[in-house]
Every structure is written in C-alpha cells, then in structure tokens.
Amino acid sequence: MLKLYDYLASGNGYKVRLLLHQLRIPFERIELDILRGETRTPEFLRRNPNGRIPTLELEDGTCLAESNAIQWYLAEGTPFLPEDRLGRAQALQWMFFEQYSHEPYIAVLRFWTHAGWLAEKGAEVPERRERGLQALGVMERELAGRDWLAAGRYTIADIALYAYTHVAHEGGFDLGPFPAVRRWLERVRSQPRHIPITQG
Amino acid sequence: MLKLYDYLASGNGYKVRLLLHQLRIPFERIELDILRGETRTPEFLRRNPNGRIPTLELEDGTCLAESNAIQWYLAEGTPFLPEDRLGRAQALQWMFFEQYSHEPYIAVLRFWTHAGWLAEKGAEVPERRERGLQALGVMERELAGRDWLAAGRYTIADIALYAYTHVAHEGGFDLGPFPAVRRWLERVRSQPRHIPITQG
Image (cartoon, rainbow over all chains, first blue to last red; front, side, top):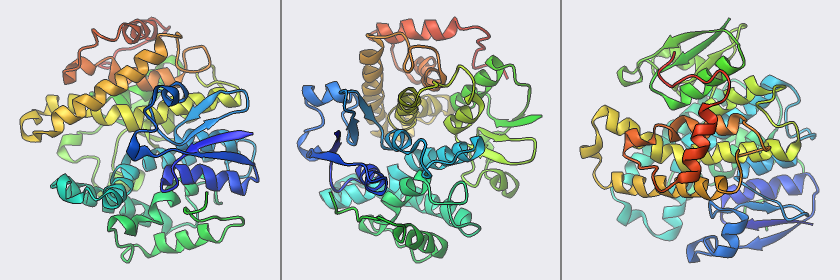
C-alpha cells in the first residue's frame, strides 16, 4: 500500500490526499509534526533529502517528493491530467505558478498566523500580503473567462491552486474582491468525492 | 515560428533557449527589459497575466508561461523527457524543487547583486544565503550517488537546475564545498549543442 508522509494542516499534503481519495486509491497516512522537526530526522531525510512533506512512498520503497510532482505521478492516465500536449503544459504552468507566485505568500501567511509568528516577521507580512493579492488577481482574471484552469475541466491544476486558496482567509486574505475565484472554489468543492482539508 | 519573450541574463529564460537550441527548433527571441517594467505592460499581460519572462508564443498565438512548463511542452516526445511514469514524476520533483527551494535563494541573490540591491535588502541576504546553501546541499547529496537527476540521463530536470547553479557564484555562492555538483555542471556543459547563458 502507498504510504503518504503528511501533516494534516498542510495544503500541499491536502492536494495529494484529495486526489488519492478522488482516485479511490487506498493509502496509509503517516502524520509528521513539522514544527517539531520530524521531517528533518536522518531517517526521514533518506526518504526526502529536502526534508518536507508530502512525500509518497511507493510499494517498492521508492519515495517521491513535491506535492505537484506526486499529483502528476498519480494522475497520469486518468481524467485528472489533460491528454493533449498543450493541455498538459498549461496544467503545469498553473502548478508552477502555484509554487512560485502563490504558495510562498498565501500559504506562508496562513502558516505564520497559525504558528503565532506574524508579529516577529515584521515588514515581511505586508510584502507577502501584497504578492498574495497579486496572485489572486492573476487567478481572478483567468477564471473570469473560464470555469477551469486547464483543458476545460477539473484537473490537478485546480487541486493545486484550490489547496491554499480555499483557506486563504486563515492567513488574513479577503476573497470578497475575487468573485470569479469564489465561484471556482465552489465548483471544485462540488466535484464527486471531495473531502475537506481537515480529513486525513 | 515560435516567439520567445526573454531577458538575456535570466536563468529561467536560458533554460528555454538552451533546450530550443539542443532540439534544433528555430525561434525568434524578443528581449524585454524586466527592470524597466516591459513585462508589466497591458500588451504583455495579455500574453502572460503573471507578467514574467520567459513566455513562449506558439504559431497560433497561444502563449505558455513558466520556464519549466515551457520546457515540458518542448521536450515531450524527445529524449529530454523520461518516457516512464516514475521518471517523469522524478524529473518534475526536481523542477518543483528548483522553483521552490533553489531559485528564490540562488537566483534572487544573483539578481540583487547585479541590480546593486544587496545593501538595501539587509537581513534577507543572509537568510536567503542560508537557504541557497541548503539547496546546494540537497543537490550535492543526490549527485554524489548518480550522474543525472532523473531517468539516468540528461533531461530537462538537469537543464532546470543547471540554469542558476552554474552562475551561483555571481550571487556570492562558493561551489567549492560541493564537488559532486561541480562535476555534474561539467557533465551538463559537455552535452552536444550546449550554449552559454550569454547567447541569445
């Protein structure tokens, strides 16, 4: 059985959990406390030298890291991945956008809020808030014109961006000015076999 | 003909240039001055709403953004992309590692050095230096055991990480303590049809 090294509050972990559930693939979830350094032990670093969850361990012991690469592995050959070359590249475009221009601002402010670190982070907070709002603006512009990010249907690109966008308010982001994003969140939430981020 | 919106000093642009050259695909290169806001004009934002180079314009006018997604598009069906499912996911793992754990530290310190912004960035500089050294450490550990990052051969995962690693010294990083990384840089450089980052 697949083993998923995970942290329940993580949107990156949630991407993989949600996809596994929607694909009806059974897995064993192993919770690691990232705040206590459980992803930086020598044992875990043998699984992922970058010391991060999610990490997926295949049945032969091979480990795969990076939430969006794990999603790609699981989605190949299923409707969650576009079948044409351009559609696949467009899905990847949004997944790289997520990791570079969205997660470092929207997910990190949520994490700092949960951990109680906002005060000590000082000027970094408004800087990251501004960049997070820019990312939401890019999504709003895109989703005002179409229902899904790639291939005209629900794919892993939507899962990748749903993960932290739907909990952006926990980091102090108001989605009020982003109506197309809010409608898209509702569309994602209404997909068959959807599960919330709180479900392990 | 393909059009590549680019900025010559950019390692992200270089990834695409190098791959196009190695695939013998002709293209028109359009240089944009990112320091003068040429990627934030209304005209360019219609091509890439995130306002970044590289952006590839296909012959029908469709635009594709994110260096690693563009690489994926160009490499499909060629030896630059692994043909097996696990190999493709491992290539993506390293490409997401590059954009999340490597580029924001190693590329950004190089950019700040070139732009003369190191002094005004203050405490962010040593923080990013530390994270950049961690990324180089992850690569060293990996490349001590094998020649290439994925699939046992030179792929777009190697191009993705070569782009900013080979100019890390321009951002003040000393590759002396990373001998496996230095040998891998030499292997990448000795591939057929390699071009330097200074070649448009």
